[in-house]
Length: 444
Ligand code: S3P
Image (tube, rainbow, N blue to C red; front, side, top):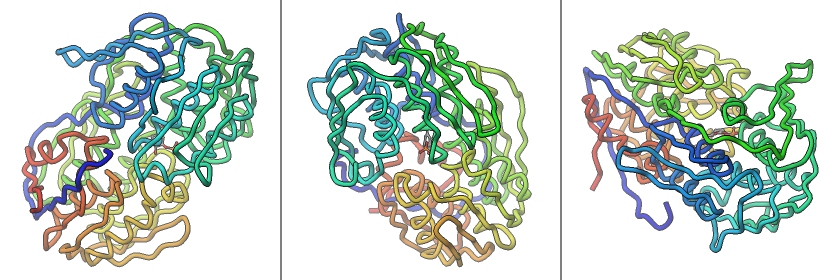
């Protein structure tokens, strides 16, 4: 999203949201389809891929590393892989834009191959910690030159003779887990990640489907995930289901806008991702799952959501990994609930596309909502949303979308200073939402 000018948006009270919609493909699965396709043997074909800026940047990166990537008119993405040891040094910088997932997973993929690559990103990504991946990848044998604080811009020198490691995750992060596992693919012997707290498991599931030698054991200290490296992967046909993290916005919109009844189709229901749905149902949300089925190795279903009277609850810290990207949307739902909602275990929110805990709290306060917070918790007093505030989005797509949802049910319209970043994960957000009856419009 370099250099694009800010696009302020506003949302106003809307009632009776109606209709069926499909939100874009899952971001996590989309990145992984391209990254694994790039080192598989043969042509991987992915349909339903998220065509947001984050994923397009990953497509450009794997192309620069030697894979062939092409999108055909039927919307299918074709990736011709180079084999598990076939990546080459790119000619120019790899620009990952706004995406932590893109850069951290790509660093893992490149770390065990003797290539040199300089990685850059936008202002938001350049402020985010990379030490969480460069530390384990250095143990494997990669070397890094980084900007101050171990941040981007960063040059990776992949290992010529990678060594397998056993790495216990110090933070509950699927990105770190995935970076180490991807590095294990071109490392001789057994690379193990120990995950004390379960995080999204798309990397493991997809590695299995691509034919990697992967085993998973549940032990007293967590999940042990082991890759035996230097085996070729086989190209796959992938049908990417809709992203539950994007579905979060129409879900909350329909719950808080009076008289609404919508259905969101084909949403992925992997249980490492459904914490928000569980939480909203506990709060009294009328959400039913219809037509549950398996698609592309994942459980999917259609979500019917109707306006509901919500009640504040205590959201347990242990649920955070399964709804880590959904707290901004949940905080908005909580501000329309009766009573107080307490959210704990939020330390990782501090290092997302923005400091999401601070950005959410500031946005709520700007719209008349009373909050309390600590280093890793947030409490929202529901039922008194005024609106009328201008929300600072800090280059964070989920902050922008969450507060646009807030404006749909607040007394006065809510403005966000920039909606341009929404294109990183949810192209045509306003169009799809307005198709249901929402009033989201550019602010001149
Ligand atoms: C992701 C993992 C999560 C999540 C991000 C996508 C992934 O990040 O916030 O949007 O695809 O692996 P962390 O691993 O940093 O928690």
